[in-house]
Length: 118
Image (cartoon, rainbow, N blue to C red):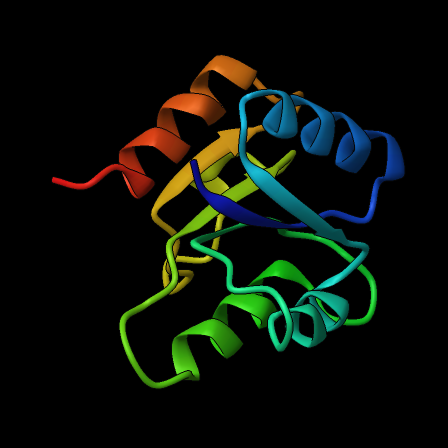
């Protein structure tokens, strides 16, 4: 199972994600914004980040830019957002998109695709 860091400012959504992913056997931590998520990466070796796009302090795009600036391989990112994928910034890197309200089956498929060995 994967170690997953969730950056989501909506408490109910974050709680639902944590519970669902923990029930699947993942180790999960959550942060209320991108800045907190960055600090958590010092002590939590995430295999994958799930981030909302619009959050206070540091949004999902800022979190992704930080992840991409780190040395080594790129951290897989699943973007969750109420913004339709067709309206996302063209230069925003992410590996999978799941719209809100969250389709948990689609999220599980994305996690599996990004964390299973080839």
